[in-house]
Image (cartoon, rainbow, N blue to C red; front, side):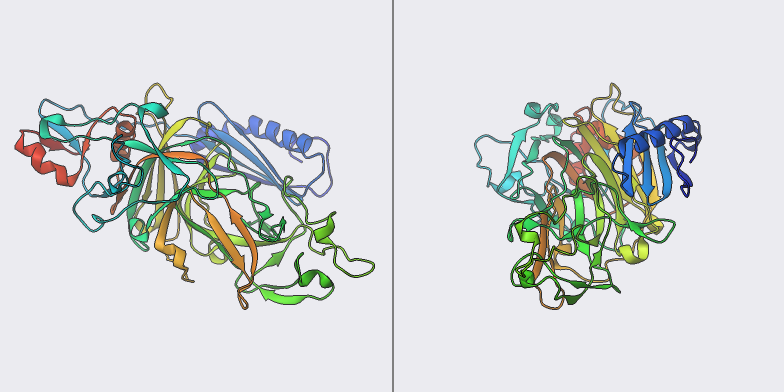
Length: 482
């Protein structure tokens, strides 16, 4: 198959999906062949579901996939930015209109962590002026300088001081923050931005602690291969930098099920029909099997082994920017995976751990989604990567109370039997991540505005918000848009 060794009859090459700089991607076909050969070499267990990726210093990534006997590849090469910020003349100040929320994590040593000043929306006017960033117990605050960022720029001439800090999420079960859903409204154009730093790869949660067993039901961002089979990336971990995500059941599927705890494990041959789950006979290479220990044998004599060692799957629906597959980024909006599996969210190459990045996400007209991503380690922080996809603007068809919230560094859910509400799985995937200066807009930001926000996040410019124009103009400053 496609110049790889060994040749196996029946293998199918499904081609390459290019994104970013298409021509530059096509020119890397030789690297695609190398990565395909590497996949074969690494897949010593001959697993039917397997993938491997390689990132390059320029932000490019090549990922190759095996799904049964079908092989494919995805190549991303970042396009070069040509946007430039106009220089300010004396008496001018940058202004990006329309910010409805900004959370500064104001670090004042005289105030306790619980003081509202750290968490309140810094925009005192408008529809979200009363909003507060809610936090869980394992979230702390730190000064920007202590986290490797310069201080925020201020305008003391107009009495404006930005005492910005960093929200630090530990990654534990009590980590994470959340905001009202109005920060990312359904069926609306919006944008958001933030700086962030991931400290360790996000692991997939396989444990169902309540029952002392492995999770028998595992949620994934699901898609279909050319044969119409549901597939997923491995390991499949997913948690929002900013956004919401939740498991979604299959709408027209049911399984005869049993589970490895009482009273189900009295006799594994007795099964009950449950809607929404799908049993699978494939699993990720690192996914532990529900087998070979006492919870996975029933109480009969002789005992029966648990009949679903690779468990069941459900899908995921989501909107926003996410840590994905350990240390990649996923940006997109899937409201019903059973109908929208053909939509492809933006998936980046692996990002460096311990390194600051700044992202601007724009949900524009007709479902156009743009991600502008800048690396804080770059010598020139005005260079950034732009990625675009078409996503759904349709809100979720099944309302879920947790859609009332937008989460930052938090993804934790129960999975229940729909008819009885019995909890049959629980997962918690919270990244160890630092988040700084999250901003929210009710309009689609331009490329130039995204670039300006990158530069602000790394402490190089001051950007005025609407309510600050009065004191700025009163002291002789003129606002400039880009």
